[in-house]
Image (cartoon, rainbow, N blue to C red):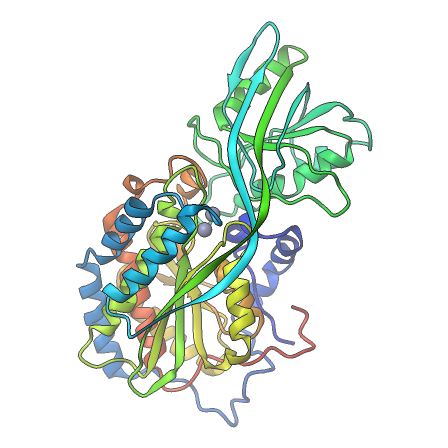
Length: 494
Ligand code: ZN
Ligand code: ZN
């Protein structure tokens, strides 16, 4: 059985269908074990030599680390995308501009090969959104529609629930003609672990509300800030349910609504104009720096090109694009290229269901053994503090060498993590993941809000990320031997 750990459920829950979220939660323990457990599909140590990283490669990596740390290239790319394209809602007019931007940027940066691969998905549009308390304390409340919500205007009494479990326990029909309000407060954590329960309110709350008969759904945003900024994000309605208007209140507005409810019944008007509108075909934009001696084998790094529409998608995920494109450029600038190619993927539509990552796996799942390691940067722009891979026993020493080269950047080998959201699908197909864990302490202050803008990024932290990805990608690409990527067995549970 090949274990494909999905430990970082917190970082991926936003865009996953509820089945995938359940998978992430269930697989947490597997993730920890998999770091030490050889996959049965990997070659036997008796037949395959231990993967090695040479002293010469380590010396090059040390130089590469300093070069990347001193460079502003990751910042320049991030600044360009957030400024010139701005918000990049999947399927919007800006989606096409982002694809064109990425093709031009890869070419401008000197990638040897640049191409696109189509990604088709349902398109969701946001037109207007408004909520107001009616009656003696009449006042507006700041909300935003959840991605996937239908349009509609609901005028109804609000019923508060402390958390998702309380709403799920509401008897069928008990909320008929009411608006359900889940007032769950998400916890701040460096590894973003508060986002699992926070985002579950968003993914499962609307369906629970409908089952109890509600005609609308409101939640305290899955966020850790105290600003009047609601956090959007995708939701889904279970099969067979008639979707109802569903929105998130900013944290101070959730506080306000809770205080009003403590004084007595509250009637509220929720008016959303948004919804699904046909299909759209975007593109995964892919650039490659050709390896010196094994060009058909790749280290895959990347981020997602789309964003939500409220901010300019700076920390989510222009930073990931800037970090990984710049890392590949730094590696390619070496006087001696690594053996394997560095492939950078700017994934389409991560936010609404990992569409780009799924399309990549559908197109490349048959070439999984040619993927030396895969890693996505999609957890903001905070400093990287931890490194891990799902590599089997014969590559653990090489993984330790990579960790040794990352140590001067303040990065420790940790027994946690998992594939970033857009490389989950290719990991399930058998590619070995690597995790470069970013400090997400303030990520959920900004995530999916109007405050996700360039000024929130620390250029020095961004350069540290780029240096880490450059060192990691170079050493993985130049290793003598593999990291265990092999087609997942048909019997694998994933
Ligand atoms: Zn993201
Ligand atoms: Zn996101």
